[in-house]
Image (tube, helix red, strand yellow):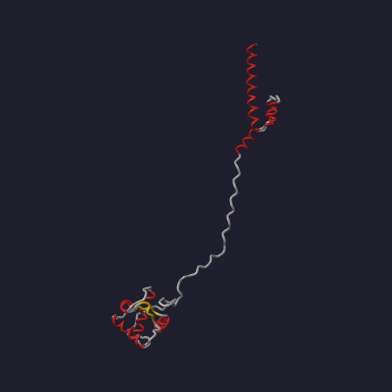
Length: 201
């Protein structure tokens, strides 16, 4: 009988300690339940009625923080891009080929402009140099272009003599201009008469 009482006393002591620990734990989460338990309510059913379900505390403690709102992405503009100004020189500028030029065909041995085969030949070579971006040409280079590309066998002294005779005959030359020392480029007037001659043949 005494052992039975001691066992029962031990059970009651352990239960009181368990309730005490439970009250301390619940007080950290919900003081209202801890107050009820502190007034002596030791019935498990009363504790269940007064306490907040544990799942609620878990939900509050573990619920993720709201994500920050993403900044609004501005809509792509449908306005057309501004036009970029071109730095290309205008067609027909001195020393530059005109738009849609007449093909430079090979020259006949007796073809001439202003009664001179040399005017036509010099203009042909200067226009070829302009189209191929060869820069100003001297007499020797003009003779080489005519021999290589125009189907003519032209010695360079003949081209130099043609330039001298042309300068002596008239003060101003309308068909070409001297860009550097004895180096020449075709003019707009020279390109015009050359185009007409090549198109007419």
